[in-house]
Length: 251
Length: 154
Ligand SMILES: [Zn+2]
Image (tube, rainbow over all chains, first blue to last red; front, side, top):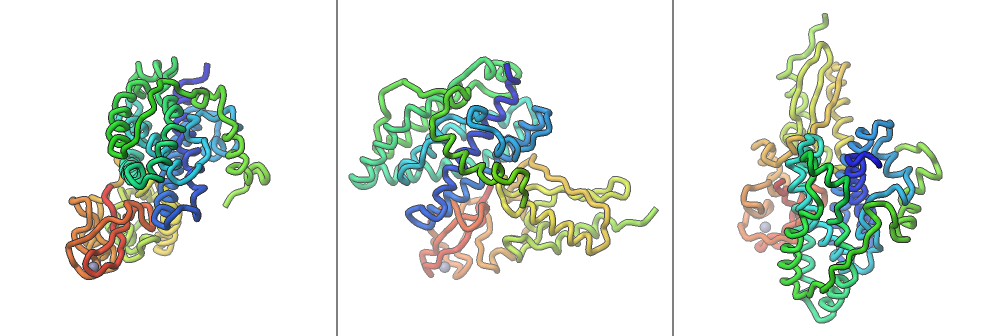
């Protein structure tokens, strides 16, 4: 079995990296300039957080891999992000729904990690949390505005929620490695974050006049690396292209 | 042993290095210089990033290197420290005044601009919590109707 700490750090860094890349695809294409700027800034925050998580992952692994090596030179099966974040952007409302589901989980996770028994993890979490509090404020506000908007925007947001809700469950999946990290106070059990996530989702989606799908089904396979969706490979093809074509290229 | 410039002097030099994105304030005004110390003859300067993905972080390191190099500092180590995380509470009063004069509303404990930095009216509205750089939000004045940057609290 792989070192649970390394696995945990990859999961953090891969979630932020892949979501950062996805939302950066909106740069120059968002419906209004303010949203364009906001998405680019959030992508940047997530990329900065990725550098910290993957930097620490490389340190813990002890094989001399940098955060850049881990980001640019691994193939799809070595990524540990949840499937939710690798899914295509769809329309703007779909992107914002995915963002809200991730932010609502992310803010609860970081709020626990600031108390991690591993000081390096606590420091990264404290730095990230300040940024993510702004992320969730914005995605929640946008979800409410679009859900409780026009008939058209409401219908599209409901469809976006129906389409993505079953991908959020994977964020709370808990395995033996998580149990080990929880025992030593390094990280909370992902499953323990679910009730606070649900409470926020209920409040915000309720205010957005959207109905949460009545299903407990959850897609799985991203955080274990066993079965990513076909979308991840396409994303990596674009993200890693330069390092693959010109190995070792630097700015 | 070669005499080296004292710590106080180094702080003054750093207070002359402009923030690359908001050049009216210095790195010291911004509150990102956490420590200046000597270990033997090696000067170490500890910086904290504002936002984790701030693209200016590397530029700032280079600016510090150039500025201290110009004052004859040859042995320099720059450390990045993320804990405790940088907060707008570390900005200097001098820096906040300069921000306002430049047309950027300074961070305020209220969590929103105290007043329009252009016409000083009190009524202001949020356009977006995300502005032209990671550290700023986008607001609009209800009186002069101009939009302006607000250095948001973190
Ligand atoms: Zn005004």
